[in-house]
Image 1 (tube, rainbow, N blue to C red):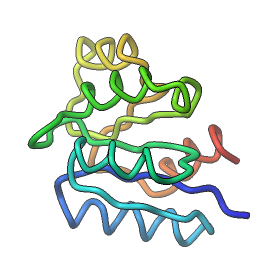
Image 2: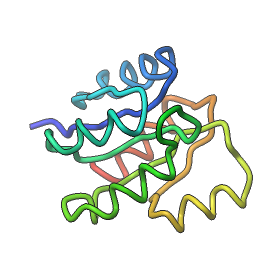
Image 3: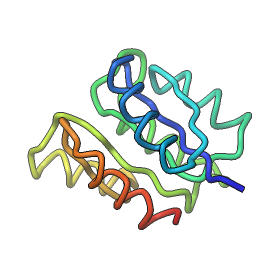
Image 4: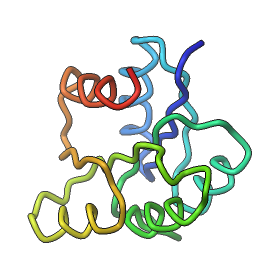
Length: 121
């Protein structure tokens, strides 16, 4: 049975590239374009890992991370932030919010897959 990854990014092009990369390795993918939509999908699907952008309309990535961490079923689910934000202060905010990792765009597909495999096999 394949692991299901929730991709959250307001850029359709980024979602497509990430989805293509993950699907090529056999992962199931659910795509959403903002944090609010992601919460709705997260509550109605079994999710093994969340991969979220930081800068999005309606709900940003760190707010999504904090919100998910407040839900019992996401207390231990790996959450990775994939964003253009590369500053140490923002990374520390992400860690404090409950993110397990931080990847900077543009992403290297091999690096992305290695990090995802580290968390969900």
